[in-house]
Every structure is written in structure tokens, then in C-alpha cells.
Length: 198
Image: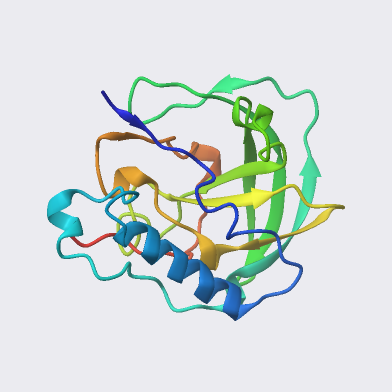
């Protein structure tokens, strides 16, 4: 039986910040390494866990902490998001994020898991999956995820330094959402976790 990837795994670490804080990224990476090194929690296969020391990250870079214009999309219909298995969780497009990376205009859709939003503590949790020009080269080919919290106003922040891989990047027994085509960035995001070297 396939295991379901529990999204928002690192939500408590990736809370919204109004300004870049290097220490928060360092703490995020530390917690991730602790999680992946813990045999009781790690998604790693036993053979990989036996040799695991730490995940590889791109250098922390403030340029990938972006200020985005948030546009709330209305009357969106819930849809079945494709996954790496036959599982099709229900999501709804919550809004759009418009920003620039190295002067290049970018847009990402941000989603909300309908069922998770009903759980205590998750009503403000959002899911931001993306692929970019590093996908399949320096980062995982299936793309990466960022956990977001609903922010006030129209100016939101996104820290790509806290982008992480889906569990499927480490172990195929997990069922992970596939990044929608609309969330493919036409630029490199050299921030966050890199591809896992087995």
C-alpha cells in the first residue's frame, strides 16, 4: 500500500516573515536534517538512511526571498490534483502570486487542500508547488514544495530558501502531488534543497 505524503510537514518552520532572516533558514535546514536523520520519521529507505549525514542545499541567498503581489482568485472550483499514484486529493486554487526573480516576471498559483483545511491548525495552510530550470539538473526533477500560511493584504512574501522535496524524491512508496504545469517557472531557483544523491 502506498504511503500518503503528509503535506505541510514543515509548516511550523516556514511561517510567513515580512523580512529575510538567515537564522530562520538555518533553523529550517537543521530541523529538516534532524527529521530525515530520525529513523522513526525519515522517508529515506533503510539503505540510504544508514549512510545519511545531511541534505544538500543551495547556498542561502536573500535574493530568493521575494515580495509578491497576491491576487485572490474567486469562484474557483475544487479539483482533483494528480499525484504519483492513483490517489487524487481535492485542492482549490486559492490565489496567484506575481513577483520577479532576477528581473524576470514570474507567476505561481497557490493552492489549498480542501480536507486539510478542515483539520485543526491547518485552515490557514497553503501549498505552493513549483518546477524551474534547475529541476532535473541540480534539484529534483519532479519539482519542489513550499509551505505557506495565509498572509494579510496584497503583499506576500515567499522564501524559496525553504523549498523542499516531496517524499517521492527519496522513496517511491509515497504518493505525492505532481506540480501543475502552470507552476513551471522559466528561470532558475538556486535556493532550497537540492536533488538527493543516492
